[in-house]
Image 1 (tube, helix red, strand yellow):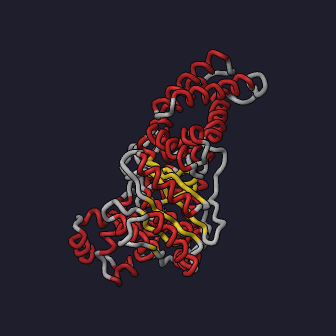
Image 2: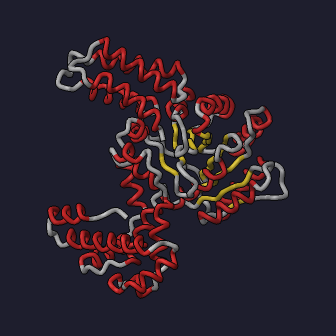
Image 3: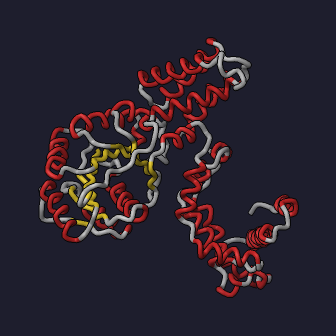
Length: 446
């Protein structure tokens, strides 16, 4: 995400990092490259020009004040602050006041509206303690109702649908009445989209909104469409005056133009970003965190939050006890792998850690990286998983055949597992970082 923009901005900062003081000349050179970086990221030239003018004024306004700060560091700080402001300043919440609260979802076909509806239902259920119900108002697209039904089952929430009706306004109204009877406190209404903005679609979404008076109207847009996404966002807002924007497919090869431009253009905040196919791959949009990631600083806060979401205190205490007793086995290792995988895409997670994103950008890392290890463990008997020390040569040979790998790979994995187990045990006993570092130096990568 934003790798190209990050690299170009970093190059712009390099022009001023070696300077001792800020001058109009070195600021001008850096500003020109920053503007080029933004335009290449599909940010409208007018927005890029206004942004860089602000950065320039800020930089020149402090050149005689903050002499103790290096020019390169100052420029990064100014750009960071301006990026945060450009993207909205602070996170914007949902208005859930209502009995029930009604959330209307709008956007073009293919933008990810239906998938987002399912993700939002899961978010409200698991993070906010709500009882949402999904409503299928796309009466045109083949299998649209079936798709939403599958998503509702996946996230464990009810769905209101009417295969017989072709009137989305009536379906939405009926869904709200039924939600009141059933005790659902949030109604999420998934509407139909078109391949492009047209009068028929706009009139329909406008009729639905006028009939149900939703507490929230969200516009879902594919961030990979760049500046076109911003144009579409403006067209929708002119007609239905939505409350917030949702950016989908932000984990794809996006240049960042939509994230950087939509708040400035429409005047409405980005409320959520969707970064994957999994139903829990939905994040609140924090402008400061996004700015940090654009500038290559990582997003350790989001990383920790993801980890906390998957944290099982009882399981953690059990694992801690086994590590101290040096009885950590392959079942425990497999459990920890599953915990990590639940947090989301591995490369995306690594990108949240300061400095690691740049180091891994050219390395192919994904959740399939665990398959080799999982195949080895699944080829063991229950007794072997519980007793790593029982793995003799004949057992290893059988495991190798079972997972389709050679004996050298099995030996390498088991050796790495044993060294990891020793390090964890040593650390739990407080035997110092020195011994642990010596062990790490001797550990070979599997």
